[in-house]
Structures are given as C-alpha cells and as structure tokens.
Image (cartoon, rainbow, N blue to C red; front, side, top):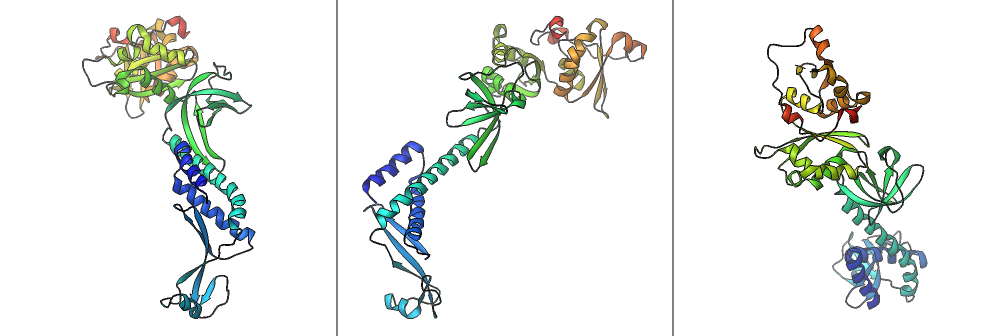
Length: 374
C-alpha cells in the first residue's frame, strides 16, 4: 500500500468525516475477498496492513489438530511444533501466503469494495445526523415532484413530502424554500429515507418556538395544538410567571410574531388562547373569538355544554363547525354549543352560580372577525 493511499485515507477522514479505522477495515475485507477470488483459495485468511511502511501481507490461519482432514484449514501438531514448540491442539497458526502479484490484482477488486464501504459509512453518518432531528423543523429547497411525493433537499439528502402531508392551499415550485417538519427517519438498504410534513401540528409549534423567545426559553409553554392545515389552527399557551401575558407574548408587538407564522403557513388563521387547568375557563377560551355565557361540565363523560348569546351561535360553531371542532381537539373535551334561548328553554341557563368570564381577556386572541369565520 502506497503512501498516496494513506494520504487519501487521511483526506477522506477530514472531508467525509469517516474514521480512518473504518476505511482500513473496509480495505482489509476487500483484500481478503480479492485474494480468495483471484487465487482460487478458500482458506481462513487475514490481511495485515502496516500503516507505517505501507506494506500488506496475507496470512493463512490454520487450526492445530492431531489428524489433518483439510490442509487448507488445518495443520498437524508435528508441523505446527516445528514452527513453535509451544503449539497445542486447538491453537491457531498463521502462515504467510502473500502472492507476488497480490498488490496489483487486489487493488482492482478492492477499489469497488472500498467505495461501497465508504458510501455505507456516509449513509450511516447521515442517518445518525437526521435521526436526532425527528420531530424538528428544517428549511429545505423544493427540487422536483411526481405523483406521490415532492422532493425537498435538506442539504446532504432529499426528503420526501407525501401528498397527504402537503397543504392544499400551497403550490410548490422548484427552488422554493420551505420549512418542513421531520416526521420519520428510516434506515433502508439504499440509505436513510426522510419523511417531512407541512400539515403536522408540530410544525406550528416549532414555528412559534422560532418566533417567540419566551417559548424557546421555556418561559411560555405551548400546552396543546389543534390544526386544520392551510385553513385555521388554535394553540393554547401557559406561563407560571405572573408578570408575563402568554397570549400577548405569542402575538408580539403589533401582531408581528404571529404574523410571521401566518406568512410562513401562507395565510393560515391562528387563534392563540390561554390554557387553564379549569375546564370551564379553558373551553370558554378555546371557543374564541366567540363570547361565552356559561360552560356546564360533565366530568364523567368528559363533555361540556356551552351557552353562547343567540347572535354569537354561528361564530361559536364556525364555518362547517370548524371553530367548535378545533376547540374540542384543543381541550380534549366534547363540546355541545347551545344558544342562550335554547338553553333557557331547556332549563340549563341561567344557573345559580355562573362562571365569571373576563371579556377583556377573551379579546386578547389573534384578531378574527365574525365575517372571517363565516
């Protein structure tokens, strides 16, 4: 082995990040294969590479036995002791069998094996890098698309954006830069395969972490997310710092923070509500921007009946039931919405003790007009 090959190993280690020991192991395995193939040998052999001198030698490994049945794999005890008197049956003896033409012939065969091992090692490095990025957000560049996927370049590898994970309101063109959510990283025979999403609720959560420092540092926590991608979403936020308004922190000065997220999601409307451990308060908040008169809770069924003013009924339900549906997903509670008139006729409203809603707090969510909902 020439000094040039040693230099190449060092260069590969620096440029590709592949350990020189991994490459040496690949070369030794290639040389063993080349020896057996080119010299019609089936012996148990190993290759010794001297990194200092650049030389390589082939050794046949034979087991010491009392009676030899296969001379390619076994050596008699008498012959072994002629080499070293300390050998005993069961020991392994190594005999050098390096052919004169071995270097030239082996190099041709080894090249392909080494290239394959280098490629496998590179794939392993990429897999290790991206498996730690599952459930994270990355910026990619749209490359191309077919009937099943949009292919998004993440630098070292192309990720797959399935049709089911694409936003119906978006059109993806080559060279577009988009943020994607890594949903799954798989190890396949052809290398790592990465699946990404534009519709996953986690994308919304990660976007707010980027835009809102209080979420990134843990001061404000996103408790839950409900999303109908491309149309409308709701998130609930909480903080145990009395001097911080969690909703205001997410909205940002003049709505700048939430607007940045809306722009990235191509106009998807976002409601930001304050989380509460009290289901009455939480459900009322979740139905924003609708006003709520009362919330009747059934703990056994994990269900609520919500009373709203007559003129707010359509706003509370939302277009095609979207507002109520998202509120139910956000809170984890079933929600049945009734108008004030129907609730009075059913004897549900008013009750002796009504929840005291703070209408000012209800108005702190991201602005959505009744006309926008309908």
